[in-house]
Length: 458
Image (tube, rainbow, N blue to C red; front, top):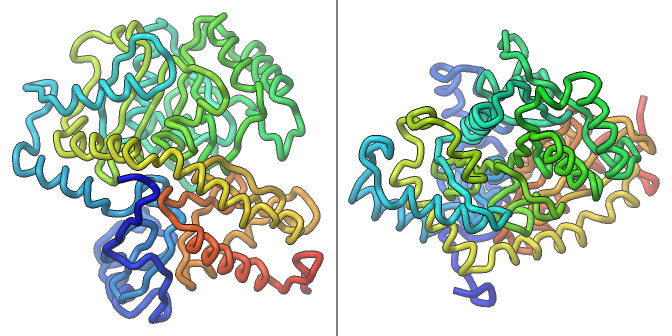
């Protein structure tokens, strides 16, 4: 199949609201949920889904919603892709589990071979496969510490690295992930990032600020690894200014620090490249992959320089379900689809469509401070009128309005003020236009809006 050929979907690619949202069947399921599921597993919208295809989800009441979240960046290739479903079914009939560290199998090796091919850098690379993004990050930290003999980990302000005890300590924002969950492990340091919308610095200036913090607060000879999301996801789709990561990578090389690109959310073709670090022209030592890697099946990976990855003794890393035969079969199908259907090119198409449709919001609404992103990964920073002050109340209103009208966007940002858009790369321009219209209605319905933007009311 080529991008020029029309695709057919099991669910029509159109928004259709036939009940109030949530509908009666969702409300009934919500009552059951409250009686049986921990409230800690919070939900953006209590709308229960039945099936999905492409960029549309259909709920248990027959409503069709435009999905701008992809399960937080997972279904990059679209929901329930037939090729992935077929690969999963075929593998499940042959072998569901054995554990690679007991009796191995080819799928694991094939995924590692492909990761060595698609991750940045032309050196020899090795991989390990695990279950989740957080597990990949934690293993990257272990590997870097073993390789360097050092303990300190450096992370960036506004970062999100996971929900395990260690990765929560590496995550910037205290609420809701970290509050009341400590104590956390030590030797983890958060340093300033380049945030062009807020700091006004060039990439080089921001990098020198970061480096000065490491020099004066930690000491480079203590640092095992520098972790960075090349495009921050939960942090608000923050993209450091040009030159920032080039200088940071140089500093890491000069000081024996392992540079880790955390590509859990931005990797695997989402941003119009296999990995978002490619937009910065930098080759990391280690790369973490997850989310979009297996079309919805649980899988994650750490890939990097062979000498670093092989520093760990046999048995030092692994896990019962990591690189499961079924999940790796799904990943191989995803890799094939990305290349066969030119989904990297499709991500670039989505970027152009988003810029065309959403890019003018900064002049249309004085509560939109910036629209930024790459590929199918964008953020809309919402502010108080005519300022750079975060506007979390507006974001809360937009999310509620959108989900009630059949559109599923996401929140983001350290101040809960960034509207996050992570659609599938197969989403059509028509669906993006429809979704944008709903989001515009949401903005305009917040306390009223005139030509100059939001008009505050008493």
